[in-house]
Length: 143
Image 1 (cartoon, rainbow, N blue to C red):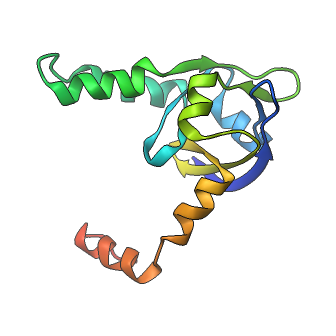
Image 2: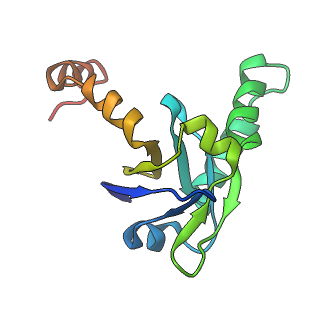
């Protein structure tokens, strides 16, 4: 399970250091794809294959299904670490997430979210603990 928040920088070639804790859990080969809210998602092989199977089971005749297939599967890149523990993020993925220098890597259970530090801080500003508690109750969850 991925948990925690780490801040790093991305270099001019699009390489990003991934914390050792995350590297261990991602494994040798993993996948990075577009994510919601203007970030990227990184999944280990098994979780990405589960996501891929679910998305690919949507009927081709369904417009939303085709859009999800393009968004997640079409943009996905299989990745691996170099000797320094870095990954290379392709330009289209960096552009989607607005990554140019400061990056936040957030462990969110089955995935890592890769955010521009600026975007992540803006998203966090909009969070309200009381509103989140109400939403949890609406989902039938209570703490």
